[in-house]
Length: 397
Image (cartoon, rainbow, N blue to C red):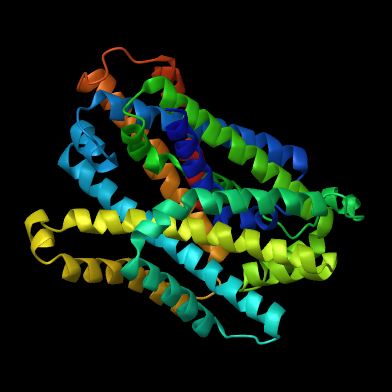
């Protein structure tokens, strides 16, 4: 069981410490570190409680229930339809985010190694072509390589931190710039903790053992929180507020962040680590979300038809997964930061508001949860529900 707990925890960390971590130092630029720390801890706690709600619903409903099944059991068919639509939108936004970030990384890597600067269209096509090939010919490789990629990601992350933290410009860490909307950083932080969508899968993997799932959720929340804060502090010690603001105004966020770090640190080893870390962050997140989307699409098709025409449906599903986000990124470049805002909004609706409503129905109306634990208490539900509504209102301004 230890192996399963470790694997589940790494899976959550792999999704959380993905493309969003790269944007956090940029979107939090200009905010005092103590405020960032306080809000990050608060959001981590709220997202952890909402993950507990999803777990409790999953354990209380018989069978291998997913989010849509849980919505149908507690909120009816209309609730399941709304959840399905929002879930698909969330996955498409995530794919667009990681696709744009992946294209920018390929562009940055070729520029650093060969001095050749690809345009946005070519870098996007090159990235999607590489991973389409993986999905067409060897999806199982993604599963087997997950722990290997996580080992490289975490190793490169900590090595990079060792080289970043002692940098002489530690005074930059508290530099403030006044061109900042202090509310824009909340949604990206919420997006960074949006791992609850995989709780049903982890529940099945851990054989619905409540204590094991609770432990994985707690570890999967706290470890990314620590890594996020260390990363923000480290980047701030390397790049000053003016540089971060300049990066935030560009259309190629990841490209300029990578190049700025390489330029400031001026070390071939650090450049290598930067590209390795950023590439694996984008890759693991992109592959994980792509697999989730692929499973979702295949689940829509009739099971008998899939068995009869397996290759055709597999080809069709992969195109449905990859074509829409590719079109979005190519038609509307420079969406990395704005997409994080939309992902944050969808995370609030799907992973906070819906679980709150589903728990209220399951406890007080449907009587599915007969003995609700303390984290399903009405106080927690009302408090976090009010926070979610407040955050949504702020995001509209």
